[in-house]
Image (cartoon, rainbow, N blue to C red):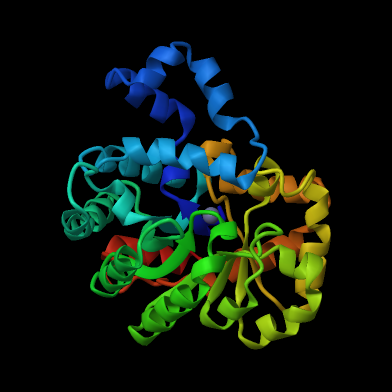
Length: 337
Ligand SMILES: [Zn+2]
């Protein structure tokens, strides 16, 4: 059995529709009333959206449900599914901690509560029954204040047992006005010893070459090989890895078919730029990691040898593998690999 590493998965998009729907029903949530039949809810939840903007609205929906007291429920089920159905040995889970805090509190109180969120997720993701090595990536957000984003970097640096790095999310069209601020925050994070990734070059609205020198990996980055292949040698020299999430580009309307990813892989392999294949939102898409692999193979985007190279890249570019605090049972997984 081969074991896999997943480097790009959002907590909000990780909840499979049935788990979410059951939770909504139990909580008498208005959406459960709107979709009393599961099949209709699944169709609503997983249907392709017209744009990245519209797609991100679904994240907001899930974020509102993933409150501090509900997080252990969602995370424990996520880990169980990832272990049983995806053979994950390693998982980096990303989310914006501020958006899981109590909305009735003040900004300062919410900032304080973020540490509890990190701890709740960290504890819920460690399971002796389903021993996946996990770590968290905390996402800065293009719609949150500078103060909150800086507090997220500080929290990441102060939580080495749970957190390995930072990301920036919220739609790559929204970084432009505050790009200098994000660059400063990334420099600050690197100085604190954190690893960095960022949603960049995902869509045609997300070209920010100024941020590229400050990221260890690139969230998506597919527009680089597609539109700016001249940048690839720089990426190779910096040993930056692309986190390519094939189903996302279809769901957001960025690409029309998966075959359009062929030049992404070809040009990266040729330039010596590593690619890790990831799910982004396995629950929201209803596509787990092994099926992302299989889709690429059956559509002749990559061959088995290239798949193996991508799978190895995922472990090589993992921010927290091996996890320093991993219990012995988890460390033993490594000897299998
Ligand atoms: Zn993402």
